[in-house]
Every structure is written in structure tokens, then in C-alpha cells.
Amino acid sequence: SNTPLHCMAHSLNPKYYSKRWLEGAPGRVPPNQAHEISKNRISCMERLYSDPYVKKQASDYSKFNAGRFESRDVDIAREDEELSPFDWWSTYGSKCQLSK
Image 1 (tube, rainbow, N blue to C red):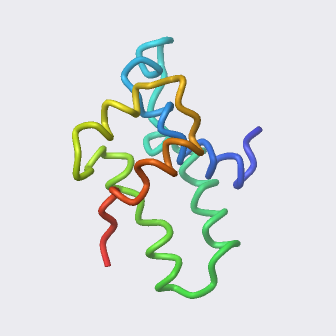
Image 2 (image 1 turned 180 degrees about the horizontal axis):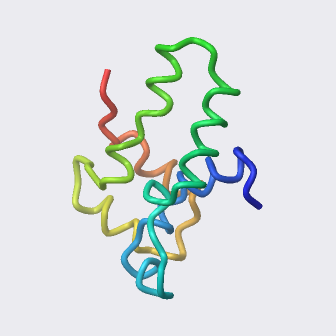
């Protein structure tokens, strides 16, 4: 599926930024580097948030896709294919330092 909401979910799944997944097949790129996924993610954000400040806060996931966290354990956990996206965000989401 390539709907805006599916692209948002794909963008927020740590698995798709892991070295193991990226090297698993030729031509794979992280979601933040895939044009169509990025375009649909932005479309999803525009539908979900009308307040510009809230939209900025919600869409500022650059530190997530760049792997900028307080702990090296967070980056290691991104490689754990057994950890579901829900469990990853529940465990490590608060350690993502988003700008204010």
C-alpha cells in the first residue's frame, strides 16, 4: 500500500532504518530518502494537523531517522527485528530528542 497513512507508518518503523534491512536487497533506502514515501508522509501530516506549530512538532522526526538519541542502546534496538514498532516506540520513544 502506498497511501499517505501507510507511508507514515512505514516512516516510523525502526526496522526500515536498520542496516540489516537496508542491506537485505539491492536498492533499498530508508523511508526518509524515498521520494514517494516522503511525499505521502507529508500529505498525511497535512491531513492530520491543521495547526502549524503542532504539525511542525509532529513532523520533526529528523532525529529519529538520523538515529540521534540519548543512548546507544536505542540505536542497537533499531536492529532488533523481534521488537515490534509498538514496543520500540513504547520503550525508546521518549528518548528521541525532538526540537521545541
